[in-house]
Image (cartoon, rainbow, N blue to C red):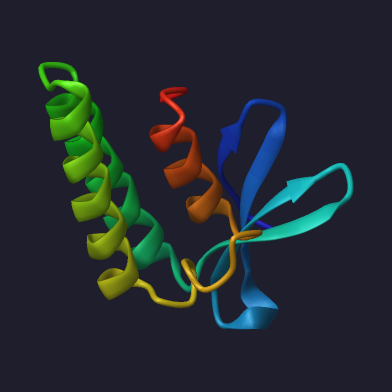
Length: 100
């Protein structure tokens, strides 16, 4: 499995046998990240947009931005956002909790 990146100790990998889907390999198994490497790149750009913009916002403005980011992610790769157990919905929840 080719490794694209790491999230802490966990590798984010491409699954050639799954049409290039991207997963994170965690201690208890694999978690869906994106449907393709291209969509993974798109999500990284969306996340970077969030990171840059959220710094100067009030709590209410940040919540509106998170709603916008989540919608952009759903449009870009609906499969990645389909389950709350997938990688990016967990990231969005961490945004909402102020952890990111």
